[in-house]
Length: 126
Image (cartoon, rainbow, N blue to C red; front, top):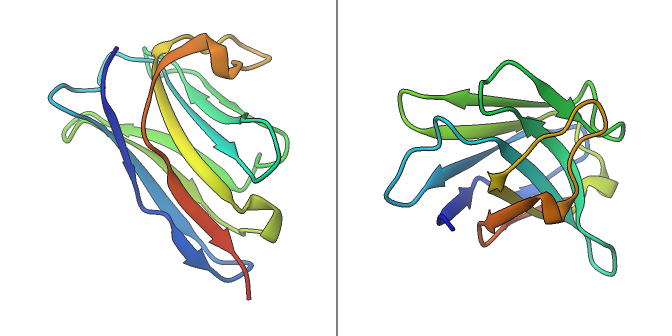
């Protein structure tokens, strides 16, 4: 397993934007498939987005398609989740995951990944 660290969460008004970051602790994420998941209170962890290890394929859940963008910056070993047009229903703890696969076109389940960060909380509220 690898250690991951997320950052960038916070409180934002509806319609606002946030950018989440995911870095590896002591290693680079360059060649890992990376998934972003979220878990709202009382709900199961759900996949939001996934980026293939080769960086050439992305998956987005229907609920965020067109609003969220996943990307990788190999120069600083970081994977980002740019979130725009945020809605109250986007409120959740967001996790990045590695050591897994991004099956296309249906996207991964949480058990497709074995390494997780501690999560960063996103609250969308006026």
